[in-house]
Image (tube, rainbow, N blue to C red; front, side, top):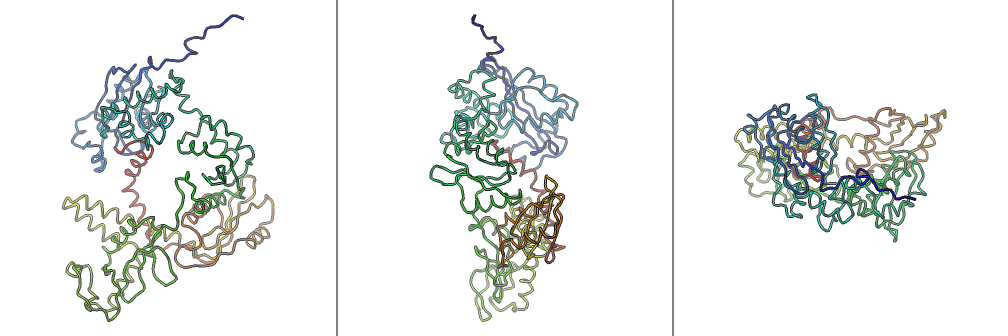
Length: 576
């Protein structure tokens, strides 16, 4: 048989012959639908040689948020004379024509480019795309770099260009990172563009070797547990189809370095079949909270949460505590840490002049007042200037703000923020904003959770895929039973039987006592999903009309762009 020589097309395009355009964008926020490009920087390279650069500021057509200006250094004054994106886009598209695009966290930048093209009548670029985040996760170990942020990789590869939140400089840094990563990929026999693209998504040898671990897992909803040879739980997850989900861990779609490392250690996969998807979600939370697997980033530590307590004493004060007692006190929480609880306390103290001293006080206590008296922030009951009845009015106002009406806190802190802003004390105003957010978010969450944890029994149903119904029994905010009623079955006997077999849940102290806040929130999300019907509610299910939830949307609106930018940082892109 004659030998056949492969064509150049079959061999692929050598990386030394590929023209890359490494580019970076600066924007006014994280969503292409709501935010605009403020700067484009790009570097064209081939075989390690720079062929050209493209750099321009872009007028976003509106003001740049102040915190974005602080992060990027790009101000309204800098872009006032800059061209609009419709004038810049044709030149940029010409610059990248016939090249392979490279970006750090490329999905973010390409989404903005595609959105700009769609808005101005251009077809989206069809260029191949290489993401240096994905490539770094493939060729670098956690011992070498703790994360895949651009600044971290630039330092690791000794880039002469330091990322500084400006488009061209960050693109230059990414060029050096790209060259370092390609050199590393060469040790994996990656020499062509086609090999590079497939290499990033290829499963590891360990993933391929352990595919058999999914063979005994059924096609059912439930929870799966990866375990090592000693039986230690490494990772816990849930799925509506256990077999399909577990199999995905052994394919090219699973690229998370942390999970790939876990797969290298795992020796078995144990599963727990659940009746419904909600039961699987709840069981996952409970198992993670109990086992705390090292490869679950969201392992729960319920014992570490804290609460803000309005103490039960003649002159109550706000105290941060770790335990809820059945003592009649008002509680706000749970908070993930002391700092958040203290922020909420300071916001509440801005509205209500409670004493801030930590010493116990009785009706006979007499001691010198602190500076809060001079500031008008405390009525000095310690000196006898304020009676117990007068002070009780403030304590009741604090209790109402925590449980029923957050408006006084919002009004007091907002007035202080406006005053600080008028004095150009913006940093102090932002601190007050964070304190207000800590209070409003937690109060809204607690009031929402408390509304259902007061109900002794709630039974609800949602349509199942096969025409039946998923039925859940919820007691004091805890999932007590789950079942699937077959299509055509009589509902009354089924519901009565499920309720009779449900877990016994007793009322306890505090607003959230029978389950973790995360479990009750899972239940609430299911209850609020389309198609769910209430079968039985033992008691009233209602939120306070003046509660914190009515103010939460306003708080979240102020944080939305910042949250998007933080998301970019978590994905491997430094803050802009």
